[in-house]
Length: 349
Length: 255
Image (cartoon, rainbow over all chains, first blue to last red; front, side, top):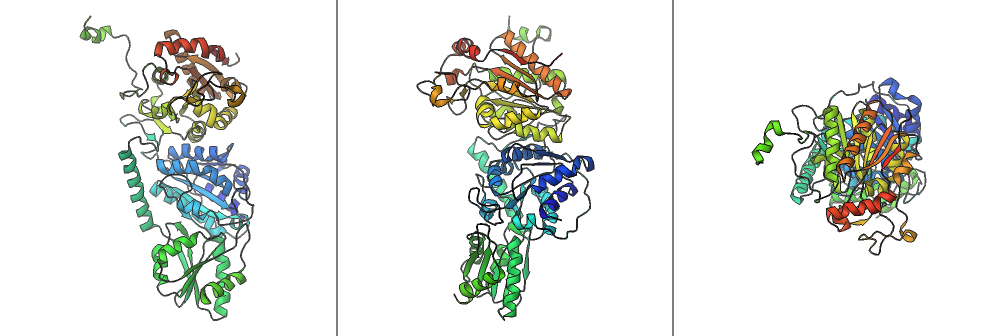
């Protein structure tokens, strides 16, 4: 299946109650598939094309505030527009799954794939101290699985979950194993606006506290939630790290290309491994810190000008040199140039 | 007559609806918000839909509306209430959904959300309080500020050549096929209060029948923002606001 269509099918199968979106290349196939499939007939799932990404994310807010499973998707410029709403969703502690099929920027940039929204996804993007849980699929299969996982994490922590995909994964076709249809939930969480029941106070979904002390309490509660997420939800994969002297760090589609570079390096006798964070927030800080103790150097490979490299450096904390290699603007790096960067920047450096 | 005599049950002629909480309203003395809140709450009470109503509060003076309505409510980002209400109504179509918005929220920053919710004919009630000024942020010019009207960002009066014209958004929305009932009312006299209440009730009854968007504008005063006493502000409203924003039904269902 095509990556974007697989995301859409996964949303239906994950028991989503609603999808609100706005077309943008390279992810329009998500809403096109949903409109074609008409899931209201299959599961009762609602699908609506909003007038803008801003409206779409606020529809997500409204439906998520009713305790429903809601998804939206977009690509970089559209995700920038959604950032206001995402901040409100994080502040009001509402669960939802957001997909960014990243294209190159800044501005309109180009419709070609990129990983240049790492900072926006991981460090905030919208205003205020908040975190999204950020899942980085490298395959169409992972895109599908992360929709289901995304809803589970979103409801476990009452927090927005972002699937940080890119134009490669969104547009390519791969074999995929779809999970079974999950039933739509009939639960009415106690924090959801479903109509005031006898004997309970009215439910208010808000991110507003006029008193500083009250707002600080909200911030502290969010921070303690984020510490739990960091403790429980880190996911990553390592390849050939047992005997490695050097380490690649890469995520998403770029990790697949880097893996090829790793195999080429191994054939040349260079002992290099790879760590692929599957969660970008929470970041695999401990794993990278431990690995760095026995590495002569680490190269992050990203389709951006150097974003995840900052988190790798923080995790390594000076224990070994960390360099970055990137192609950007929609250009995809080749395994050959990644290997060359390893030899020049790390081994020869 | 002593206070106790007045409080005797047999002398009771009017009481606060239970759909309003006991919290003290934060609105300025003489402001129309309190009355508009109360009329909507009374209608929800009379229709017996307190447990089936979900409201959306805006950003502006009524940002804390959820403290006063004893119904489940969501607080929207500035201007986004119609989109939030759309999200709610699409997943809970059997509930009554309303937004309560001011002029800056609805007719400036949220124009797109307002027009498109109305254009889709979302089956919701939009209550629009138009006092021609940004009250909460301290009296800046609103999209509905009248020509020549002074505000902190139009200190020499609104110059329509450079600042644009006061926006008759309600007439504009009435053009859209998605709107079913569009009316403009006020709450500055007992007769007008009754008309507003009647309009709100009709709107919620139409929502039950899945008729499309119902839009109730309430032209209101802002004594603090206009720098007038409540009485002066009501007189000024009659003399200046009503000629530009005439009261009455703008779009009524065809018989």
